[in-house]
Image 1 (cartoon, each protein chain N blue to C red):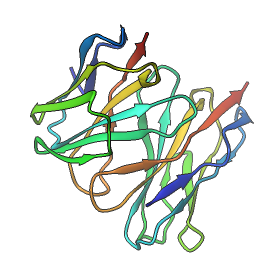
Image 2: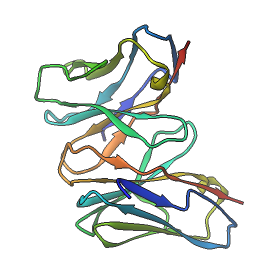
Image 3: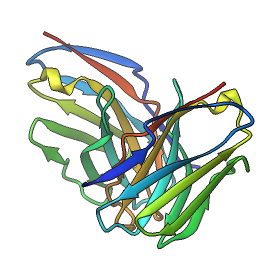
Image 4: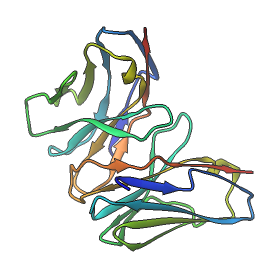
Length: 113
Length: 113
């Protein structure tokens, strides 16, 4: 079965600095999708960024980018120029084939002003 | 209303009660999901419906009973719950294809006394 591991339960960063959240996963498949979702306090979970495994180019969305290392099964999220609104739980997730998403345990990110 | 809505937002129930959680999506999606989010545990997928048919049931206890009367509505019927069932229950929807983004509702915070 596929598993997703986030080894950092909590992270903190100074406002305007850069932070990287780690994620590793286990799969024997070659075609799949990876996601980072953000869950702000008392607010709905929203998609941050998405990566197709067949694409070698790392996905980027404004201040958010990923470092996708397929051979190492690693999918880290880099947040540049951190803002107070980035404070949230961040979940890494894996999807292959059907609609099922497998989530990691989450990383709580704190932004220090 | 837009997006994915869930009612009620908070629910306290005794172990002998019967209650239902409701989810509605206004996005024209074909797939809907129930997740359980407990403290310090990854999100657990409970049920997946695609075009109103259940396609995934992750060995959820029978005290949880889903119902999908149409592609816009999803219910989770609860009866004879246990205190360990206390959690945030999230509903999500997606267009229905592999790799699609899932759109989440705000969740129902359930407390079983």
